Length: 194
Image (cartoon, rainbow, N blue to C red; front, side, top):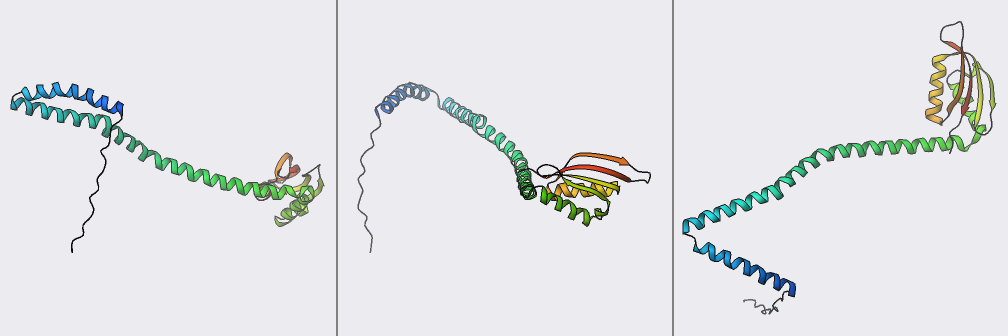
């Protein structure tokens, strides 16, 4: 059984007025060129046709293909660089968020928690016995005095305070002792601000 589809009768599309005038103008330009082409000998027509094809191919290559390939080459080199930059920025953003969270935790508690943090971290490093003075200084600050503390131990402790608790050294006075690597230290520490 054959399936018969009804024939659709589509209306003829009418061109807008400006398109009709452009088409008419194009026809008036093409008609003399075509007449001239037809007056040429068959060999000359073949030569003109081959030359035209060559000209069109050269224009397509010069105006479309070559610029597109140049841009593709540039983009192939740029995309991996941009991806590496994006990965670095994401890592930095994550580190900033971590630091902000740590800084907010450390500073939210004020000077009381700063003193507790100093005592606990100094005790964990074995420095609690060398602290001769630990006093609050305004909001979120503390004066700490050490007697006869190892310089490298003190610096490692300060680095941990900064990295883990957002505490920074605002001022430091260090006096060398007669024993090598041992100092007396007067520090003003400040918790991270919000």
